[in-house]
Length: 117
Ligand code: AMP
Ligand code: ZN
Image (tube, rainbow, N blue to C red; front, side):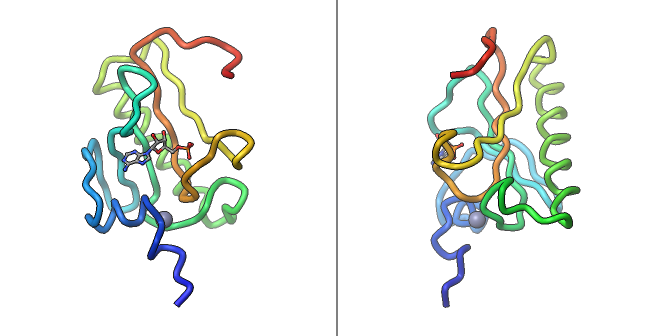
């Protein structure tokens, strides 16, 4: 009861209840194609452990957050987009966070402007 993972979209993807296009998986991390890509490469990398976002992360989640970023770097290497890519954590609704299971966006394959909107 009151299990936040029951209705969480990304936990449902992890459980296979909702289909996704898997890009990478290991013991702690899962990565899949974003359904509404904003760049030629737009991959979401999530920890298999549910927590809502960076704001809610605990000290013990530090390694998982790092692993998500290292997975992004590996995917970027495989996709040959290392000339310039971006990893993004949207934190809170005001920054566009719409799914409250921490996820790293990996965006690349086109030129990326700064600052982001
Ligand atoms: P954010 O707005 O930072 O919370 O990012 C959520 C991302 O999840 C958005 O880029 C969405 O396009 C993406 N998204 C939503 N539903 C799905 C889905 N079923 N499969 C893959 N990506 C999704
Ligand atoms: Zn979740």
